[in-house]
Image (cartoon, rainbow, N blue to C red; front, side, top):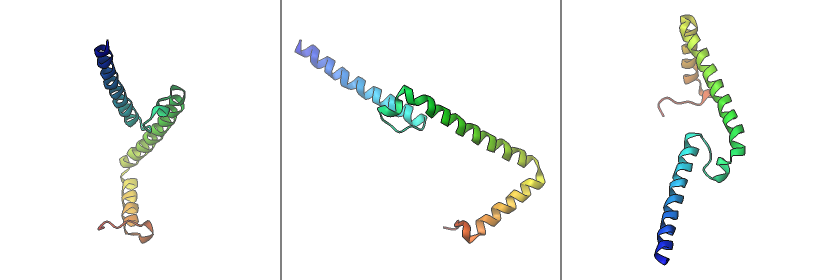
Length: 97
């Protein structure tokens, strides 16, 4: 009986470690803070909705930029603005730092 309890205890420790690893990967994959509170099903819905909104915004921005790249004149204006920003001290970017 003691031996069985010991084996079961060891298996329990291994399973808990495996669950923790799965939870950590899930949190990492979905941009959540690790911990049991992050995986609360009641909180996942709003978090996933927020994530979807962010992805839609990024997609919209990328589609806008892609459309701009199709317009040669707009692309040249954008590149010129980017060059000016690189050399603008107020921008705070030193390309040689």
